[in-house]
Image (tube, rainbow, N blue to C red; front, side):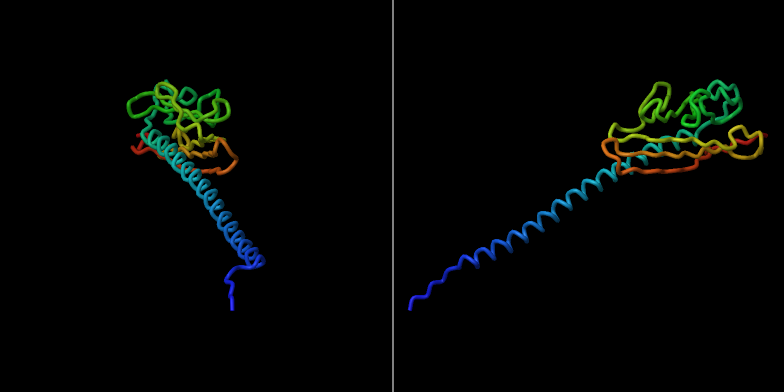
Length: 183
């Protein structure tokens, strides 16, 4: 008796089909994992960039001083913070702790978020785009309520410059570190 130990054509086709299905699904999972990781990396970079921008603005605004001469806050003598008269609520000017005039500029008229101290510098990398920034001031002149500490609320919308997503909106309120009330 001669026993052949070989595979038939049908067995071979079934084995190849099963192998192809397993490898196709494994490759699909691998590609989905790589895409998911790429999205996560972009989102993490967006979080890092947003955190840096908010920290830079927060530190500068916390150390602001009252501008008694109105040399920096032209539209508001005696104020701690003021929007630049011609540019509106997407800008803010103030005197820093070294008695220098500083300003943050945002919005579509300049493109990236900029700060002036004394030259113009970009706060954000070219990988991201600030779609909106609003500075909401309260208590800046201390005229309505004399003991109200000046505050700035920042609303920042930032997105990936190369794609519509991811996008992040963040808001924070900052008051001065040194108590600045009228005596």
